[in-house]
Length: 183
Image 1 (cartoon, rainbow, N blue to C red):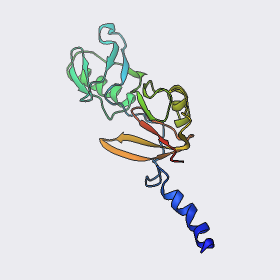
Image 2 (cartoon, rainbow, N blue to C red):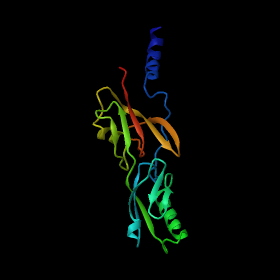
Image 3 (tube, helix red, strand yellow):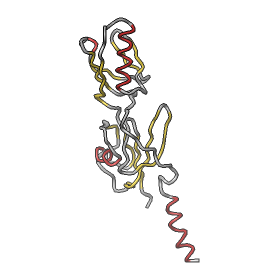
């Protein structure tokens, strides 16, 4: 009987683990970044300074571009957006041989919740991991589970929820929840 209890005890404790029911989160690959609501981009239209500047993508995924109006940018890469703008300026005969470049100046923020000293919204930086997000949020509390957390990410309009480790790369807009230890 005692032998059975010794075998069952670790299994029962593992079932109490806060992230035990979550699947591992799919890896985030930084290449080919897709724009989304809340990103700020710098658009440079060579030879047309009045069409250059910083623009914020709204909640519907649109940019308000002078002479073009609203242009849907969410889901495109900066390079694809530059090509779309080139094409629109040419198609509407606004510029002859336009040359447009787009770069992200401010990424969507991440959110860190749970057992950190300063939960809240923080600026995303490329290469950010769960551990660097926790550091920005003031570090773990004494009750925190430090070896895994929950991440919620929106990809192509679909919400993904999964388990991440301290080395997992985060994506702009991620919501990270640091679990509380139960014992």
